[in-house]
Image 1: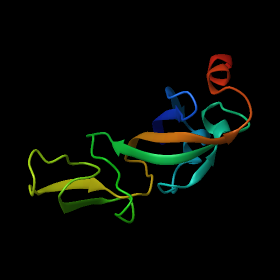
Image 2: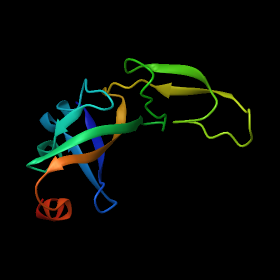
Image 3: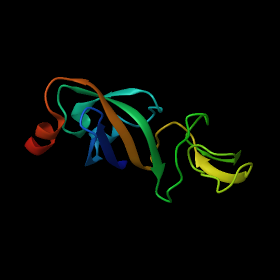
Image 4: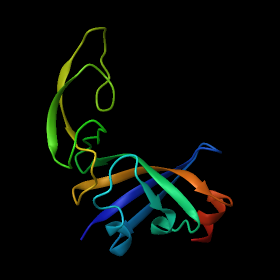
Length: 126
C-alpha cells in the first residue's frame, strides 16, 4: 500500500504545509506525473486544486521532469534538479527518478493552483 508525505505550498503567502496520505487518498497520486493537477481533497483541502511540482524517493533521489516513467536513471548533469555544480563547467553522473509517481515515491511536492478560501484555515480545520 502506498504512503506519501505531501508538501503543499501556498504561492500567495509563501507558506508550506505537510500532510501524510495513505490508502485511497495515496492512490489518487499513483500514476500522475509532474505538472499534473490533483484534487486537493486527497490531502484535506476540499475545494482546492493542486499541481504536482516535484518529489523524491526514500533515499532522497529527486524526480526530474525530463525523465520518463518512474524508474531510476543515471544522467550526466551540468546543473538543475538533483545537482548543483561547485564551479563552472563541472558535470557529474547523478541517479535520479522519473517524473511519474509510484509506490517508491516517499515525498510529493505540490502547489495550490485554484480554490476559494484560505489554505491555512483548511489545514487547521483538518
